[in-house]
Image (cartoon, rainbow, N blue to C red; front, side, top):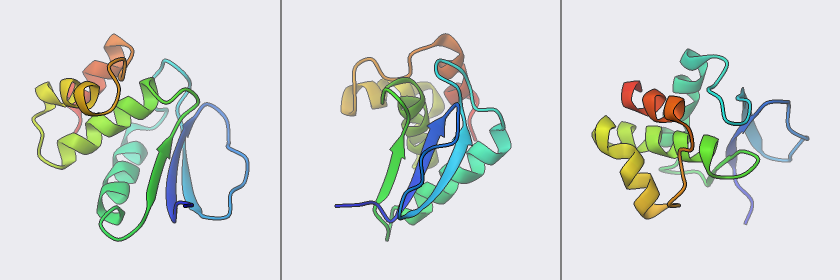
Amino acid sequence: MQPTFALYLLGRQPTPVAWEHRWLRWPDFRLPADRATTADALHEAWTRAEYDRVEIACGGGKGRTGTALACLAVIDGVPNDQAVAYVRQHYAPGAVETPWQRRFVSRFR
């Protein structure tokens, strides 16, 4: 089933897709280029997930996607200092790959 909304976390613009999406410039193993835009997009994805099929994707599916999922967990009420462990337990053990990605989650609002 295709998503109805997607966030693509990539260093370069993604190929066109048929569904509504937002591209966040986010190079591999790094942090997003614009933190305010990223926070806004993650809040939008969390809100839309109630009624849309939302996809969040990067190139490998662990670092950037894991970081975004941990931020969504924070939005949903998981304490910042527990969000990375939560995503590693429920999504992928290697999610949120770098120290700066973990720090990003710890400071996310």
